[in-house]
Length: 247
Length: 246
Image 1: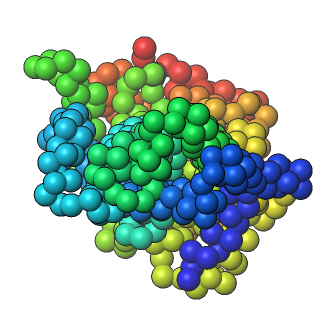
Image 2: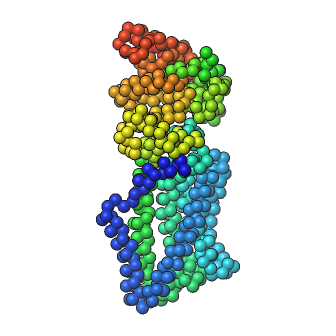
């Protein structure tokens, strides 16, 4: 309850859109990929609903993988960023992130079956490490006198997490999310094709693998979607996250 | 009167290279009385900030011991940092309120107490500004407000005015004296400026060059507000200057 006082004022700074023109531009950025997909479906003689469904299924898989990764990466980073735990754990995490886990993808697909769960499971490994190491990077840059402020004012428990750890880790979380999702998009289609799920963009690209025009336009549509999400969500958040740390 | 802080045989050594120890402090002994304005001065690198941090509990791993009066509870100690140490993601209001988060207070009490400090430190127009929008002087006002909001029994200040221009520093020193007279906390302040020490202190402890130890503790009996141009002020300035070895 008493943290409401702090949060009420803080929200002002999280404003992403600065004018009505900015909002209109944002709507256009959302609209263009959808229009493109619609025109593309007409051109390729694919039912628009099928195309939209495949796109949404893929986005949903990546979103779930991202949600799991971001929570796990943040919690792991908070637990292992300093002290003896960091000395022991960080080299282990570094080795773990280097394991070519996708080499195991065909076997896993065989054992676990061509399910959405298998796709998400493997996507997590593509997304989690950039987030984890970016958050670690942010936490390692914490100024010593900020830590001392938390000690002097006995900031502990939830207040410590909310007022200190969360804000200092946010820039790393945002940067890591951008890199992690970039890797995620790259892994998404491959994973869907290898696992052999019957929906999603992987399935779509595989169906049209002999048609270079449709494949090329499909990749263009994917790029437009990624561009829109970056423009609407990540770049403003990146800007905001770093301006929040400006002294 | 029982001292509020006792420092006994305190020493501190740093390992700059493996197997090579540098003594920063050696055999420091002093006592600070309740509501006293106590200032530490000394040449650069003599360990005065280290001593302050040891006294405040921020620095561990020292020899000897530091004790505070049983009346001083955890949370009764404030600290003002040389580089302000404000959280850039919080507004002025939020930075000041930070000191109260560990206390079980209702929203309206937090609001009232932050309001009092904002007024006291003339920050009304900047309550919702972020630190990067403030001048150095304003930032240190926030640092002072954040430290004073908890009504500390002991306030530690590590060269709080060294990052400010001389006019702002003089103004803040005047205000600090006013607040100290109003609230009467014990203040332990580190400075390398002799005039600043004489303007503020009841007593000034002069530290020797590394390893820092107490060279002499000088009582300043001048009436406040202290004019820097009085013969007594000059005499004390000369005495302290002669004591400080480089």
